[in-house]
Length: 259
Figure 1 (cartoon, rainbow, N blue to C red):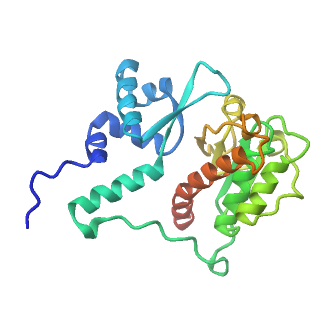
Figure 2: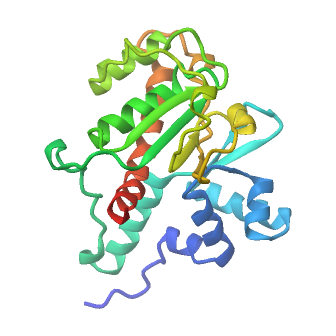
Figure 3: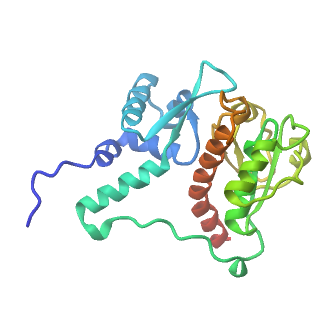
């Protein structure tokens, strides 16, 4: 029986607008401030802010206050929400069009030696960037070369970051020590990913012009619940980083296949 009067899925209504689509595609690769999005899409700031407001109301993007400049914010695209919305839209058109989740990484014995190189960096290299390094290495079985550094490294990895990685992901980083950004400035990377708004402002240029990405993630050590039992702040941070890494993996896999 023909389905008449069916409402257009919300994601289709939001994404169909040309400017909103350009904003979504830009934010799919990195977090940006409004003024950076204005430059990327070459539209007036009031127009960009208006459409960002619609995307925010639709639950597709969210702002986070910049830790570098508290008067500014970074916008982040919720890729999980987009994936769910796309699946819903496809299923509304025809059941066979409902999207399936991405396939898992191949077993370690089927993986090649690492070729793609990724650098994660934050300020202290004690929580966010070592969590990202550990999770990416874990999820790729070592087929991606990955390292993390800090602009002002702390004396040790934060104990709660060590605890969350061990308890939630089965990863032991207790023997690892923070590393300074200066130790890798002459190395070649394919991707340089900053997880801290402050370090983004001081990140140097690297050889061969790697792809630069920014993930605006607050420092869990400064959260209100940083010291609460159960490590809630560190678990939230690890979960967010793990989600972002899941969406980074297809990009890295394609780069490996093309190399």
